[in-house]
Amino acid sequence: MQVTMTVNGEEVTRDVEPRMLLVHFVRDELGLTGTHWGCDTSNCGTCVLWLDGEPVKSCTVLAAMAHGHSVRTVEDLEQGTVLDPVQEGFVREHGLQCGFCTPGMMMTARWLLDHNPDPSEAEIREAISGQLCRCTGYKNIVKAVRWAAEHRPIPAQATSDEMSVS
Amino acid sequence: MQVPAPVEYERATSVDDALSLLERHGPESRLIAGGHSLLPMMKLRLARPTVLIDINDLADLSYLRLEQNELCVGAMTRHRDLLSSPLVAEHFPIMRDAERVIADPIVRSRGTVGGSLCQADPSEDLSAVFAAVQAKAVIRSAAGARTVPMDDFFQGPYSTAVGPAEILVELRVAIRPGSGSAYEKVERRVGDWAVTAAGACLWLNDGRIAQAGIGLAAVGANHFRAAEAEASLVGATPSEEVFRTASELAAQHANPVSDQRGPEDYKRHLVGELTIRALRRAAARATGLEG
View 1 (cartoon, rainbow over the protein chains, first blue to last red):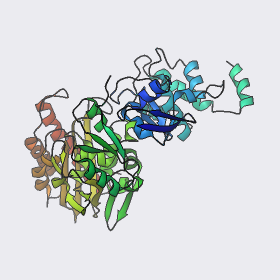
View 2: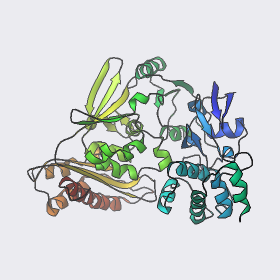
View 3: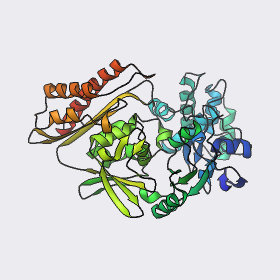
View 4: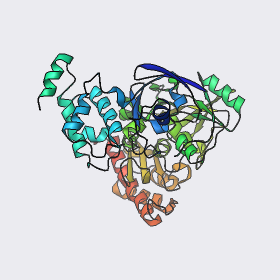
């Protein structure tokens, strides 16, 4: 069947089997391999992307179900050459080691901060409670999200100054 | 790699459209809502529908409202909306208690109330909740709507009263004064299915229990209910003693089995303990001692 959807602001159309999962659609059909594919059972959360502005586990959504809808993947976090504060936070606070869970963690973190710009540690832990990290013990992920909360997106001109401060 | 077997896909634009698609494609077609129960079952080949009929566009089935002293829950209401609703928290805190411990925030934003109930997994928390509050299910077919009590809705594991060419559209729960409710669950880790869970709803009148509902998940209770325990409470004045008796009856009549989540005797112990905890909190809420 033919599916058409908006992915990271661009309309895409592909012929796919109705049984194709959204995670495989973005990775294999669109080459957007930033979204990872992990447990296949909606437990690990590394496949989290946004569907119509809401985080979903894309191993448990059919590409067909996203037809006519809007998808945002981790590739869209970076704007031009400017990292999203969430990405910057993961760098600065060592929010990853192996990086496998990172795309899902960052997409959930961005959504959380968009809806709750100043989350407590407990609220961050609740938000990522459907996602598994086997490296960090979550501590540095929480710190990374807090870093992003304290460094909200700022106008482009000011951003370059900010980024040079370390 | 786990992927579903080949399947056809249709998208319904309305309840009537969904019903006519079900008629056209026959009993091997299935409605898909949030998909967080059905797609995992399809990956494991535990479900092999020939056609999926997507009802996610039926936004008019997503609502929470009061109608003539009933709380009405649209079947497409997402778990997250049930969790965050002040209306639900005010009248049936048992629903908020349960939603806090169902899966995780991302799954809750996708999964639906109707989908969970139609799945009728023996461990499903919402099944125990809607059994405890003695809800009614509104089921539509081409011939019209019919309303069935939850006892008739649940026909066994993974089996409900919803026929092949029918759709669950709404749950209705009567609101009566003096009610209090609570849900208690033990899970191995956050977001897991219950090892055992118990929900209680009490309706007090003049200091006595006019009506009682106890729902149990994951322990093989008929229709998710502890009927003997409920009966023991009716007419009594709430006290630790009558709650103890009721919880012992619930444990005695439950049918847990040993599995990877725990041995039978441990689950039976949990039925008793979680039932009495739920009853205490339900009573405290009914009398305004706890929010």
